[in-house]
Image 1 (cartoon, rainbow, N blue to C red):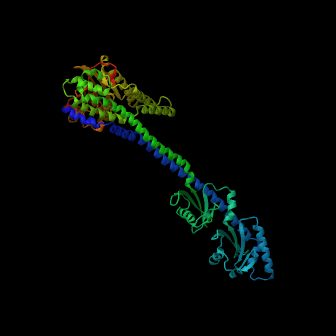
Image 2: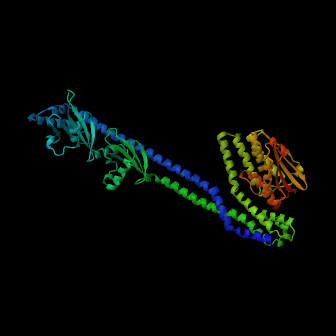
Image 3: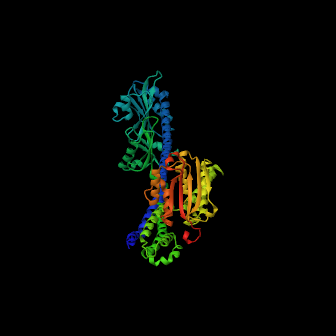
Length: 604
């Protein structure tokens, strides 16, 4: 038989594993991927927040350590300034010649300065230099500076460019010279007082201030070399490691905090000293803060794994229940003659065998039904997959709407428009979930439609008027579930929206020639006759629809799928084609076989 030869290759290709793969892809793309995308965005946002928090903390610790160090240096400058003003110091640097009395005065000056600086244990030594006679005085006595091979960096600077203001020099031996000019009573610079301070002597003061936390505080000289570290063992590390830190610090501008990943992932904050003699830096290794990032990353990986497994399980369940009736109907397609006497029994099985029973009822026992069954199976598969895309878990959507509603009530109080509309929408979905019937009485379908209209009225008020013309004797007639709401929605969106949602919609029904006719009519815009003819042709053939006509196509295909090709949807203008420009509206008529509803397995 030709029909069997046409349908059977299709049935053989309709494998469970192929259907499972397609369903898994649908579930994963529509549900899991958006969820994982949200989790990824939150992870990136959380990472940025952690980095910013570490940089802010790093900058705060830098400011605190820098302030302590600058305060220490300011105190040393103040000590040098007061020591330079001692009368014995001023007198001795003005003496031009060395004599026996001079040595006595040197001992007195050394003792006076020592007594003045003794309380500051950071000062290693004190040096007094006379511009008048070129003599250098320290604890060992007086010596001519010219006779010394290595006086100190301060001496070279002072001879080349004498300063009139106090200043600080960084020595290569990790020490600093606090230099204070000495002035005569006449206002002339007559010498220089120098305090030598080791950076390591500053450590005890820094530690007493509790300025260090997880990072390391550095002092860097003008050449970029680290001359002080709050980590006692840092300067004993390998030279390459120290150079990596110096390189990272040099590449960060003063006054900024930056995440550096050149050598290791660390946050570096840099600041100039108040005395402009060096820079401060505070470096925190980011792995110190990685525990919370690791927890978040583990959660993301776990979510990906759970999402894939969940998608697979959901896809398997959906595929199993979608494929089971297909497997049963294969026997009908292969051997229809064995099922001819079981027409009534097939009606009690499921939706697909109910379709088969309608074909068997309209066919001769000796006719070949394989071709028509094959066409309907193909149409049903397309309809089922479209349904799977939008009905993966309607209970989830219902529960989500309930949650949103109570959030709106919590934020805006009872009686707000948002919560009212969400209540209606939730009831709408609940009504759709109360049973799995494919066929329902017109009465139930009208209840569903009136609930949708209540939602429309919340949004548009009385600008859209609804009218009813249905005799109660037709309430028990069979219709497919959710067939009127898409049509009414089309009338609002395509008919009344161009008129600013002002107009009338009439829903009527009548019995004629053993058929139930349900009409949805609006007084919005007409369709051109050419467009109307094309649309009716598409409804007749079931192909060529645009995405915007999904409601009409869905209702039309379901009617034809269950009841046959002579039933379905037809569209016409409410006026003749000659007056189609007047905008008098569109009439959509749904045609069903007129059968009274009897709740049984055939409605499933």
